[in-house]
Amino acid sequence: MIALVSRRIFWNIPVIFLIFAVLVLAGVLIYVSIKIRREYALLDQMLDSAIEGTFQEKNFDELMLSRLESKMYQFLSSSSLGRKSIEEEKEKVEELIANISHQTKTPITTIRLYAGLLEEKDLQEEEKLLVKRIEEQNDRMAFLIENLVKMSRLENGIVSVHPVNQDIAVLMDNLTGIFEKSGDHRIFFDPGFREQETVQVCCDLKWTVEAISNIIENAQKYTDQNGSIVITVIPYHSFTAVQIKDTGIGIAEEEQASVFSRFYRSEKVNDKKGVGLGLYLAREIISKQGGYISLQSEEGKGSCFRVFLPERSGKKAE
Image (cartoon, rainbow, N blue to C red; front, top):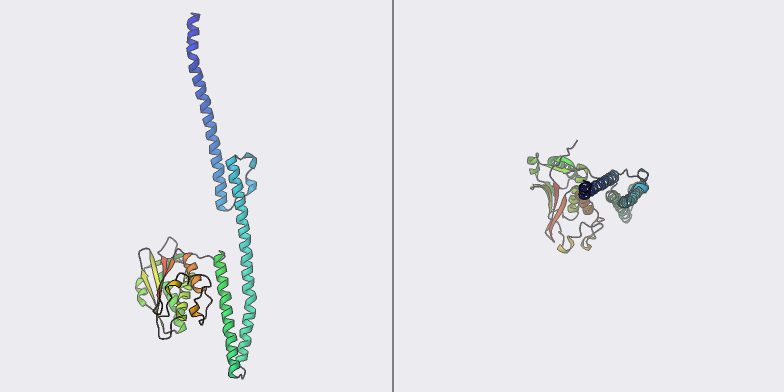
């Protein structure tokens, strides 16, 4: 009898050991699972706070972090400091730009005033010519500073574009109103855009008008008085293009890739007014809205710019 009981206990030992091993393994798996979930939850919390820009070192105790969490913590801490530094630098740049803009307006206005007073005097022809040159250079300086301020604000994200759905007819009416006042007989707006009132594009109206105006003004500079500048709306599948086609001097093929560069001016047009920022700003403004600008040109025959604006999105104009 005793031998039989001993034999049963002997055969049950592996079973008991197996059950014990399974229980231990299950406990380990549960512990590891809980630990992994806790780490994932903490990492998720860190990333969420970093995305929202609210990550703070004091919210996380480094003693409680695992090696992976600790590395993530260090990375996000440095990123948070970097973001704060960038924001501080942006504020300094904005303040500097505002100061430059303000400080230069006064002397430019004063020079313009004194030049106007000189014109009222009984001057000789040579003196009148000198006064005219003063006014021209003063206007050029004002134009340069104005565009430098715009460029700096766009590049530093101080000024941002806010694309919303706009009727293409509203955009074109704004442009028509600006250039009809100039009385330039070379500019012709194809009235066909009024037949496309249902066509909507996603753009920031103010900045898009400025971008397209820069291209039209560029065409005015390089098209003679007997030439023409035609503005047309062309709908495509996912974009609507505003085409500006002129019969001006055209752009050499080897220079076409450079005309959108900052401060670029061809040696062939040094006698024309300009600082090389108009087309650069136009491209920056349009690209920030998800659009793009194409160029086709032949030297001596004219240029054709197309401003492609994306079709409507979910945002509506107020």
